[in-house]
Length: 342
Ligand SMILES: Cc1ncc(C[n+]2csc(CCOP(=O)(O)OP(=O)(O)O)c2C)c(N)n1
Ligand SMILES: [Mg+2]
Image (cartoon, rainbow, N blue to C red; front, side):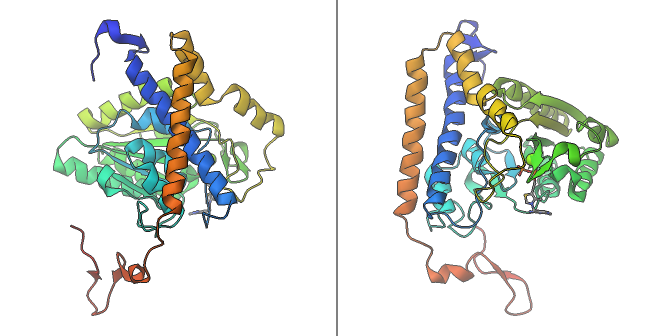
């Protein structure tokens, strides 16, 4: 949205737009912290992969999208869903496995799916979302409405065949897909230097002739700028881009991971010097936004996260009859959906 020159406060954005980015990062942070707490209390089962530390990537990249655009991600996806517009209550209820969850409590943390907001998963298989993103991109290209797909994955996913298949097809077929690798330097306990023969994704993009940009994933404004260029290329030229966002997860791989494989001073450095929210708040204060406004936004994020947990906890588990709903069955030999999509 264009704003008048006098409204510009920082990086071409108005106060309102800047505070929206800030509130969104805080929402993810406080939501994830609450989810971590509830997991420890035994309210959330299965695996739980927190996004804490990486908030600037989802926020900066997804905010400039339109509602019709598709986002598709990995198992570390709560933040992406929240930025795309999913209701925090429904996302938290999904983590709790309740019927009010965004996937009716049958998907859990790794399978958030919200058709209404065009958030199309939540994939637990590393790299699975990338060829699927190409499928969405191909459909969007045929539909000709200018919609695009953005897909998120980790540095571990680029060693999967699926990444290379997707990159090749996206460029070959000129698909409107934005690929965003959230390079947090580790895939589970494996450090990047032990996994990659090169130190950036640039040569891999070059191998497929694809546009590439590397960005500081702890700087929400830089991520936003980079994403806007890639979104524009996808929407107006039907061309893919590979973005490598340099970031760090502040917690273990999942709640089950004590993360002893990372040097303590490295973790400390990222947490204390590179926190994307702290860095952005410094910029906002320098631009003239007072601390009270920032604190109020944080209080609001805490309230939303607490309310989401209370909502989830008071929601029922799915009824037993739900067990056979929304699954593909084949009672007659002909594949049929038990509950056809509307
Ligand atoms: C095909 C496949 N292989 C292995 C796994 C087990 N696994 C789950 S997460 C993960 C690490 C992925 O790391 P990365 O892509 O860097 O994402 P991050 O967890 O850092 O966000 C692995 C190996 C899996 N889920 N799927
Ligand atoms: Mg990683």
